[in-house]
Length: 127
Image (cartoon, rainbow, N blue to C red; front, top):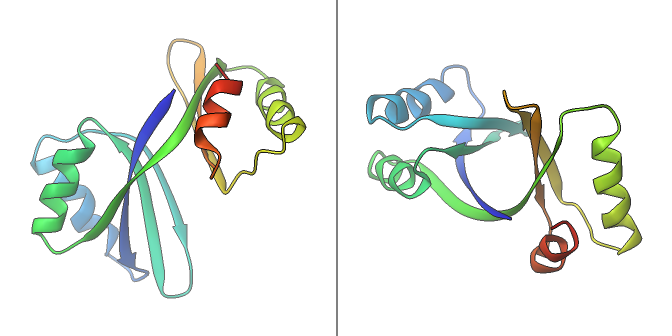
């Protein structure tokens, strides 16, 4: 399945994450998954929210730079070895992975989120 992710770009300084998180919370937007990647100067806050489009609009009004990106989402059993099976399929079909992260849910499943240039091919393969 295709999952839309909101990415917010911020300076990598103490306290810069808090306004992003507070802005979303005060506007009733729930963060369902959160991943932060950093460099020396900037950070990328990648997240799934209860309403990415609304979140992006509100954050942009506050001066934050953000984008919405499509990822491939794959549900797997939240058990040892399940991620390997997904990665084996991608590797066997020469599908690159730019980045990947996941989160476990309470229903015994995990959602694996994959950024790739071959999004449609990966989605079809992992159905």
